[in-house]
Amino acid sequence: MILAHGIGGRADLPLPGELVLQAGGFVVLASFLAVGLAWRQPRFHTAVAGRPLPAVVQRLADRAPARLAAQSVVLALLVYLLVMAFAGAQDPNHNPTPRALYVLLWVGLVPASLVFGPVWRVVNPLRSLHRGLVTVLRLPPDGYRELPKGVGYWPTALGLAAFVWLELVPDARAEPAVVGGFVAGYAALITGAALRYGPSWFECADPFEAYSSLVAALSPVGRGGPGAHGPVELRNPFRGLNAVTPAPGLVAVLAVWWGSTVFDGVSGTPWWATTSQLAAARTGVPTELLATVVLAALIGLVAASYRLATGALAGRLVSTLIPIAVGYTIAHYASLLLTEGPRGLVQLVDPAAPAPTGAPAPLLVASIQVVAILVGHVVGVIAAHDRSATLLPEHRRLADQIPLVLLMIVYTMIGLYLLVIA
Image 1 (spheres, rainbow, N blue to C red):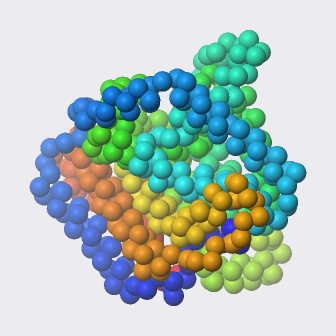
Image 2 (image 1 turned 45 degrees about the vertical axis):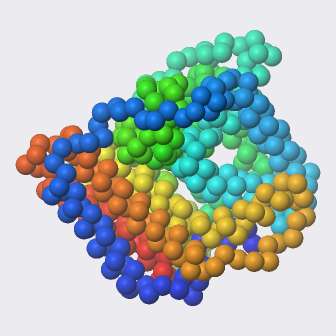
Image 3 (image 1 turned 180 degrees about the horizontal axis):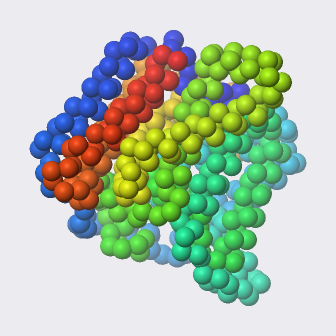
């Protein structure tokens, strides 16, 4: 079944669980002590030019027709998937729409953005749809109203929360018509808001574009200079991460991102299946409502624990959680992407494509997962220390970072526990 998300049981990951947990906590702690003692001045707080990519890449990236062509192709694909969602077979194993949304877009967007930069900003079909409506209806290209300054990432946080709820909670989440209804509503809502507030709405309020752009902060490929209009260059990912501008709602986005992925890991365990069914039987509360409450509680717990650990610096340090979220997302969905991704691509051409007969080697999947979590946390520790070196006086840097580092160690242990033991 497509929505059997997660990472498999302990038997699928041939690694000694207790040893992995101990090693994970030690790696994070050791990396903090190493950078804390040897890293006295901030290194990534100033803009430093990277290495420009070849001229042909610059021309291709900057040409409006190339972007329009890419967006038009993806828009045509979106229309095709909507038609298939409502008019095609309602068996998810013979309909391309569920895999296109849950695997190719949601899961595939992370490694694509990590390698190539903010790809969804380039191919976002709703930008093409917006431009077409503006032209046909002769509407103001910049909208009717200026985007309120306090909006920030709050629309993205709410949009991501709605999506992860659909992905993880309802029993009907794999039904093509349900998926099509969500995609149609999402397209109408985001495009309608863009008609009112202008194209800037996509940058902060389109959940998938903002999600892709946050992941792309860690990409070695990025735009130099301010904004998204400088030359395309190879850069230090730490500088890209440091360039993420703190904004209202960004903590909420990271809390939804991390909390929902943890919930997906928990809800895939035998313990959850037994406990949720027993609780539903004793209380009469539907399992979907119980899952919704637990999902919301985990998101709230992530947000509260992070704010407690960082205090007044919560907004300025929040981008240092991006590597942790990226690492755990890759770890959590590695087996799903390797198994279902190829079938999702084939289904775009042949919806009745047979199920894959092979599976990735367990040791390969386990290695990807453990390395992704550990690298993500180490990068987060380094980024947090460098940012703290900018924000805090020297005599307080190490002491004030301890709560955040302890929280990162807890996050590491939870992630590794769900991978190798649960």
